[in-house]
Structures are given as structure tokens and as C-alpha cells.
Length: 319
Image (cartoon, rainbow, N blue to C red):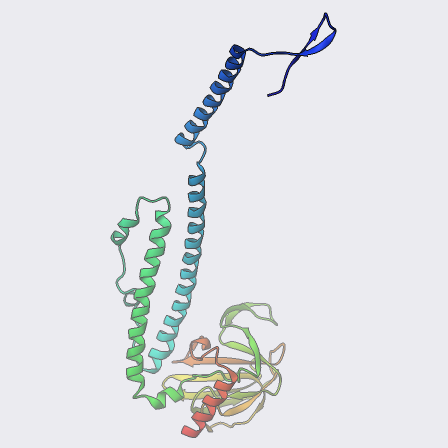
């Protein structure tokens, strides 16, 4: 506490003012009352929740981080669900088709899952909706994976007695992974690169350099060959049996002729830029029972070049 001074008129000097005990007690009492009042106000604010205590602030921050992590897991579950949907489509449109098994109904793939009674124990919390959604997605995915696993068991059982049909279906990419750059145009609705009109693209385009070899996607017989300066350009159609055909368009060279028997992996020609084409590529279609299907359902997309060559050489030996 600082000292106060007064002017001594007789001596004409400043003298240090002496404070009595009573005055000191009075000043101390004022500070005590002020401090106590401030403490009482702060305690009231903490108690009523107007200001968070340090412990509460820490817990709220930790809870916010946990909610963020749960939201991230929730988003990952959505990604897993999308990947599983792709697996289910491949199962129904490829594996079960070649094994001559009916596709699984949607209700079966959902495994009869429904209701919210299983999640009542998660109610009553601030983030109950998020927790219930996450738990429900987890249960649905587990059930769908179990159904998919059983479906594969069934497919394997039937496929073991159908070796010929498995070799006949279009089960590989018609260009080695090392020989094409990318799928430049997928199956589905698109704007035509030349006409600009919106239409359905009935196959996939594999961007590759001119002269790269094109392989038959399965065992079969060449049923049609056409050479043209428009449309599909030079193209080949192979009939594989079991309802399958494949079409290879915009070819440069054609190695086969109508009536030739071909094996899966056998070269039938080379990549070109013939017909209505903006650059060297292979337009490839899969036709099942006269309906154009998405070719991506019928081949392993991430097959390495080594695996591709090993598979085709093995097939040629077996045939």
C-alpha cells in the first residue's frame, strides 16, 4: 500500500501522513467486502451456468472432439456402404449370372433389418441422434456383410461345376493394364464428344495408344466383323455363349475373321482411332441377353499387368 503525504504549513515541508489503526481497519473492511462480493458473484455465475468452470470447459471441449470423431466414423460408414453396394451389384450382375443363380432380393440383402427399439439405451443424451445413427449403420453393414458372405459361398458351390461357362463369360479387361492409360469414358449417360448430344454410352472407353493389343474377354466365336469410317469404325463382335457377347470398336487392325474360335486372353486386333473417334481408344461393350450391361461388373478393375499376363497365359494352357 502506498503512503500519503500532507503539507506542513509551519515547517513548509511535506510530512508522511500517519494512518491510525481504526482507519486501517476501515480500509481493510472495504477491501474484504469488495472481494467477498466479487467472489460471491463469480460463484453464482458458475453455479447458474452463465460462466463455465474450468473443469466443465475442459469436458465440453473433449466432448466436442469426440462428437467430431464420431461424425468422421459416420462418414466412413457411408463410404463402406457405397463400396458394399458395388460388391452387391457385381454379385447379382456377374457372379450369380454366370452361376445361373437368381439375384438376391433387396429385402434379403437387408437381412430383414428394421425398427429402432434396439437403441433406446442411447436416448436421452445431447448427441443421441448421432449415436443411434452410427449404431444402426454398424448393425446394417454387419448384417449385409453376413448375407454377402453366404451369397459367395453359394456362388462358389455352383461355380465349381461350371468351368466352361466361367471361361466363356467376359471376365478380364480386353487390354492389359500396362497398355491402357485409364477408363476415359464410363458406362451411362454422357454428352457425345463429337455431336454434343446427350445419350447413353453403352460401353466403356479404354484410352490407349494406337497399336496396343486387344484381347478377347472370354472364350467364344467371332460372329461379326465390320470395317467402317463412321460410327464404331472397325469392330468385332464375339459370342461367348450363356447369353454373353462382347463388342470391340474403333480398332486399327483386326486379327480374326468371322467364324474363328477364340480363347480368353487371345489377341483379336489392335487399338485404333477409326470411325467416330476423337483419339486412339477401345470402345468395349458387354451384352447379356441382348441388353448392354456395364462392363465394370465383369472384370477385376485393379488387376496388375503381371496378374493379367499370368491369368491369360494360364488360360491358354488350360484350353
